[in-house]
Length: 141
Image 1 (cartoon, rainbow, N blue to C red):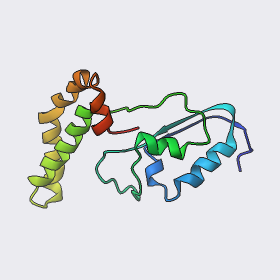
Image 2 (image 1 turned 120 degrees about the vertical axis):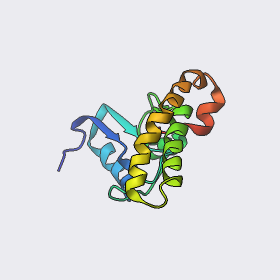
Image 3 (image 1 turned 180 degrees about the vertical axis):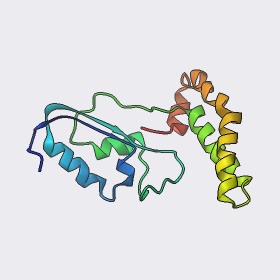
């Protein structure tokens, strides 16, 4: 067992959505984190289903704020922009559509469409200047 207030930093990236009771995890992090300690939470918002081992939740920025309400927020935002999000979804949409329900073809298509659509992600350079872009289609918080 980790002692109360004994940890300087906790980092959780792409894991909180796979936990059945994330509020319990946040309470435990709050217990072990020392005063002035740092917590970094990265969570999926718009992302394909990812059963690894289970996929329970997606979190908006507001959802993360509620989940972390007992911590002081230093900064929040997105780590994947609108274009990157759409590129990721488009790759998987096209791979599924043209896989004819065959897993091997799907896997090949994912790689193919990643190569075809990679350039879309670079539109984030432009779209990140649009306030409405991250307010509607940002991917991860």
